[in-house]
Length: 340
Length: 291
Image 1 (tube, rainbow over the protein chains, first blue to last red):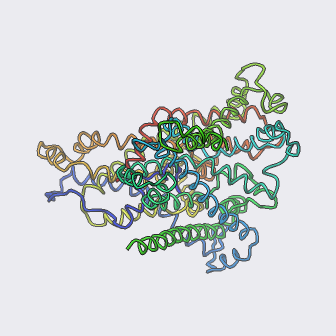
Image 2 (tube, helix red, strand yellow):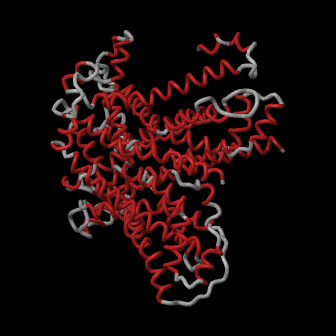
Image 3 (tube, chains in turn green, purple):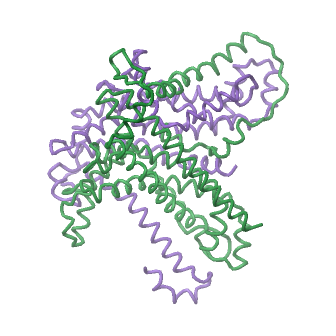
């Protein structure tokens, strides 16, 4: 994703994508091309569009071309090599390992984050008293505000803090664990062990994102009419039943959008992985695609090869999004079939 | 869990059956989560006042004296001060520009009918969804060819361009929602297109502008990949790069106290902005999803 702020598109894309620009309130306008009108269009549309085309769209297109060359950057000559870069990538053990690690992140991070976020969102919205008005637990506002703290902290700072917390000798985690009498954790390197480096990194990313998705789900659940819950409660449904049979189906589209957003983030994960283990971790066990791309481009100056990696990242992202859509549609189709 | 032990009580309590254990379990989970969120932040703040010796001695101990030595060291020796100023300049300028250009573009796309409008809309959508990593290599050379690589204006213009799609999307629906009668009234009163926008439409879009501005502020302040790849001149470094350099040189040679102080300095502005504007932030998320 471009900016971490851009995740929160006010309108989730699943609502805008299929319809496109919707015809809005508009009436016939006189087409008189005065100086005022011409200058208005040039500045209002031309200026932003020019920036966008030069600095966003143009590089995207160029990347596609570079990926088919063996360009090494600072030399002017670049040979067209067709799909050779992609063939090399498939046989590059470092990159395939990185793809594997990214896929692990793409599968685990969204599932864990969204599950936790959903549970907390349900507690905060409908987890309260079992009688009277449907409401969340007491102090819901406080929990909500605190939960979003990690989301506003820069990713690099999150990585740095957790790196210090997980520090083998002076970190908080080992301090607490040895304080509890678990002496085997004295100077245990969480980020330096093949078995714990990846889970620890996943934990840090989840820590950073739960709050935001929780907020998203809270908003979605609040959009469900209270009558539906009240009717379900009269029919004897408990909280678990209401969550499973009402909340979940009704916010399915929000979950899908969230899944795609966080999936894109997890497939990138550059800032977190770079902060926690800049070298890719023990035995490259936390090296991800984006890190390998950055190194190939800016440390080894293999720009054609790095662009091919960029194309692979984009493709993996698209496949991921398509998968989420398909799974949601298949699950949804079953539900509708059962209802009819 | 303790939930089961409280069960017998629930029989006599007036609220519905099972309320007590559920409440205990819910609060237990949420409190645990909040501790997990707050403890690392507090610990970082605390450690930023400790000397390196104290940091290595014990992760729990309080600093012997509350001095700002680490902050002073980080501010000067590690270039945190310069980076802070650079960040403020870059984020501030980019924020103003992206709000201005984004609202102008959204206004035209949202309220005028012309050839290619749909194409531009979908292009923006593509810019929002494609991973930046695909663009980063060519972008490096685009900036180099323009002589903007490693300069603050170069970073600003990149920030603006990459924050544009999100800004336009959010404000697009906002401008669409404003009634036509108002711009017509302005036209009848003799206002040109420029005046209609700046004096009539823009002020009406203030609530939407406010929430987009907050999100953009957080997003730009937290930006990492763009500066690390494109802002190569050390004098122009932003905060994220200082933190990254602490990490990449992390051995025992690093001033740990300064590292904690740098993290605090990076976090405080966004955290303050969030706490001040959190109502708007939460509101805008619900606004978007409830449609």
